Length: 256
Image 1: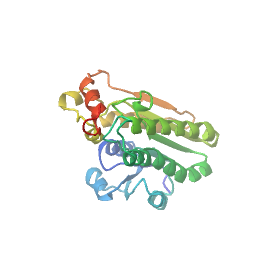
Image 2 (image 1 turned 120 degrees about the horizontal axis):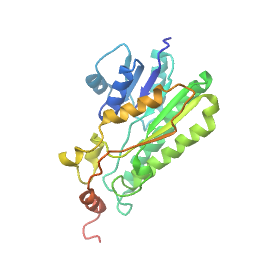
Image 3 (image 1 turned 180 degrees about the vertical axis):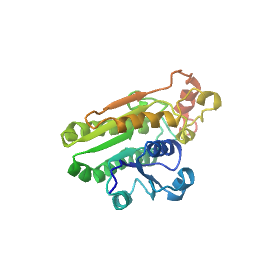
């Protein structure tokens, strides 16, 4: 069994997850990079002895357990879990969000984090060491139309869940962190009612910025934990058009 840190990253097939997995590899860690399509992971990250690409449907508890089992079989354990996989709705106003959209967002952003966290905790508690980092959102703190009703509620829920893990398991050597970024130029923006143009994206953070913040939380000595981290673009852009379009997204014709 290697003495290197073993990091499991969800949503590593595209967007922020790719940069997180790459940053972990660059830091010398062993990485279990998961996505719905494992081939996509190897396409973007390549093939390395330090990398295990695993197919994972985060909404399926059996798939979650299989991914954790694969990590343990290959590398012996999971030292760090990074809950990165995320999903947003098209409709943003609580007036127009369907139950199907609401349930889908909750399944990926809340239920999956609970199942993954529960799956890695027994080994971490046994070793009296482990780090769980969940990618939340500024939407957890500033509810509104940019993040949308289901996404904001989901991210507020996982913020509370990470606080629970921290408060109840810290004396078992478990660290739990919630990272809450504002706008990041990732593929999830394509789900927005108004897809931000190049000018809008120019001032946003990049996935690599969030990845660097996460690596700070992971690589600090075990005696220290960053409980919460809020990161945002330095320049605040005008979101007036975004808000206007988001307010109408999903509304039936003729609705006022």
